[in-house]
Image (cartoon, rainbow, N blue to C red; front, side, top):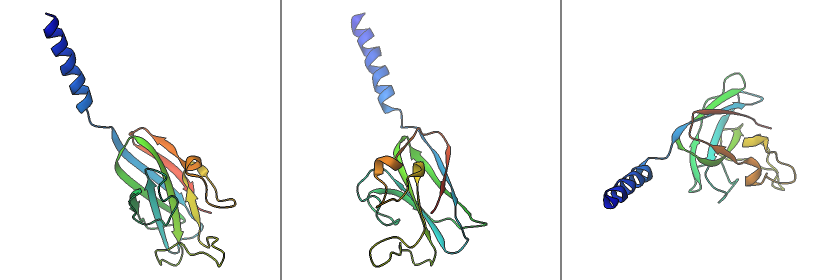
Length: 145
């Protein structure tokens, strides 16, 4: 009897361990000041390389580039596992696929970060922009500045 109980408990534990992580869609509503250029949205899974360029990198989960209409763009990341993330937005005004900077390295193109994190005397810290995604379909809003 005891062996049967142990077997049932082990079977239940292995079934729970095999359950896939919850995944959902993360939608990012982006507000811009113009329809000019491109929007690049990057979803970061850790601080390695953050904030970096908004291009495909090993530390970036995904990059999407939606069109801009009437000062708005929508970035959609599907099948995102529940975890903590950061979203960065580049409004690439001249569509050169780069963040243009002035001679001393200050960005000349609008940027946005999740959690409303802002550039002050440098880019925001990863922790300031990080948010928990529970795997349920979620929409967040980011305005680029």
